[in-house]
Amino acid sequence: MQGDNVTINITVDEDEELHLHGYDVHTDLQKGIPGSLSLVASSSGRFPFELEHSSTELGALEVQPQ
Image (cartoon, rainbow, N blue to C red):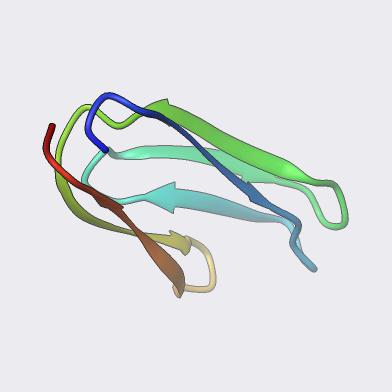
């Protein structure tokens, strides 16, 4: 829901960058080390997130309006 704190946790097989489109936030990830991306869901809508270097879409963050 809009206004909620959101965290995406991920572990990757290769060094990568996790990117959340729409919010335009990203974080570098290291092979085998758990990483996370945290933010406040300030905008409502559907926002895909992907591994940037390999262009692998992993899912989408869906934020409902308050």
